[in-house]
Image (cartoon, rainbow, N blue to C red; front, side, top):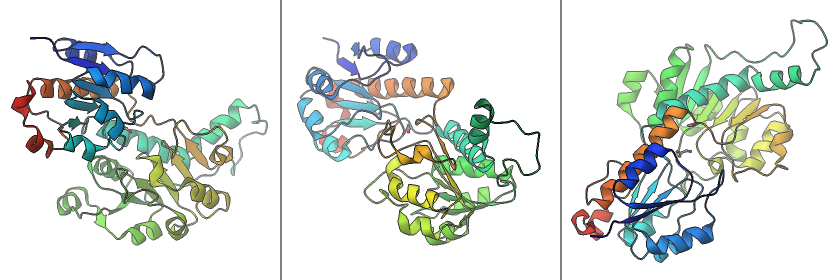
Length: 335
Ligand code: GLV
């Protein structure tokens, strides 16, 4: 029997490609440091049984419809807002992601951003490098905000939100959280307190976002929400850029309605070099790298490859996003 065919939309780790090659004829997009163009994905998808995608690929109904023999889209990310999951399910296409693996690494980076904005690390680095440090040490130089003993507000207490909460213990912080679902077990285990969204916004000194991007969470933090925050509070976003209304965030930061923000994600990525947020000192910015450790990114790619291979072999993948698809196309019909 002919081997199934797989297209990988981006240069990935060899460990992952090796797993795919054991089960399929694999083609990897050759471009360096860039995603496969949409037109190429649209043409490749016609010939393949599996696509291994990244969060930069928009896998919408047009792509899915073109994939006449497509059985699986394996996203190498925990978020899957780049895929039209409903359209995939209707067409019997399995969608998988890589949850769990990047939890701790993303939580580490959330704290890196939180500490960096509170203690003005990036700003101080720019100051020293730009040779402006000409006066001797001074008691009022680069005053920031304490982190220990403050109140942390977590919006979205999923895996990453909980990992962020665990780290807050070491800083002796009070932790409030808001989520659409109350998690009593997490409250007992982590000592976090459930609050309404308004209460979290009004009472926390640091607010960190850990929700998926959906129709409900798009611009969940806008003018009204920012105006509820303390003037001394900071916003940290390592989820998806569009959860925050960037224009309103810029306004709030510029007017001093909040003290600062640290962002790993943007409404458009790469963000526009003219994005006014880039002109502000009270922000710390990163190019969507919260999960970017060697260990984690390698494991994510390997997991994405394993998920994909499972579906090609007619087995249930460990990280299936759309279990309803099994009713449309039961696994055994895949092989
Ligand atoms: C990263 O943003 C991911 O969703 O994995």
